[in-house]
Amino acid sequence: MFNIWFGLVFVLVTFSLLIIMYRMFGRTGLFVWIGISTILANLQVVKTIEIFGLTATLGNAMYGTAFLVTDILNEKYGKKEAQKAVWLGFFTLIVMTIIMQLALIFQPHPEDFAQESLATIFGIIPRIALGSLVAYLVSQLTDVYIFTFLKKKFPSDSQFWIRNNGSTMVSQLLDTLVFTSIAFLGEYPMDVWFEIFITTYLIKWIISIIDTPFGYVAKRFPKNIV
Image (cartoon, rainbow, N blue to C red):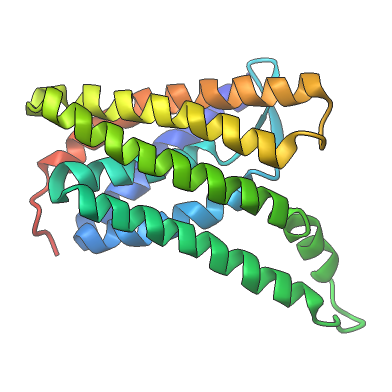
């Protein structure tokens, strides 16, 4: 029960920080947030928790903010800006993976205490990174195209929730299937993998609903802030 309630607080804090970042730094803040969310989501995902009685991974809230960012950019600045954010996140993950793998190669000092912990976290990053890279690129570009399509079909401000939730829920299903298959198939027993898949998508679905009010708040900010 603690994880459920604390998870809700965690989601609200995460999305609130995103909105503050946008309010303070405008469009630049959104692009910076894409880099932040990509790195933190892929660090958090190595931790598994139990929620709703099922096994799940962390990182879903932070990862969900990336989809809200591309939706905000698409909504207020156009499809090209949203696509630019997708590619920024993609290359941010590549850079993190390469740099940290090189960092692990250094011989640690005899008194060093960090190498083992870093190796534990980043040693499995390559497979997770591959899953993230493929899933992120496929799902985010899908999200941008679906959002653009829904924007033409449901163009009014009051219908933003349709564009936001419709694009995110479809793309997150695709993302979850691709990522969990590449990152965790063979690492966990099949029943645990299935739990992770179902729980991860359920959490992403809930997060997608929670992020909608934050999207409406962001829509009220002027396009030229900062």
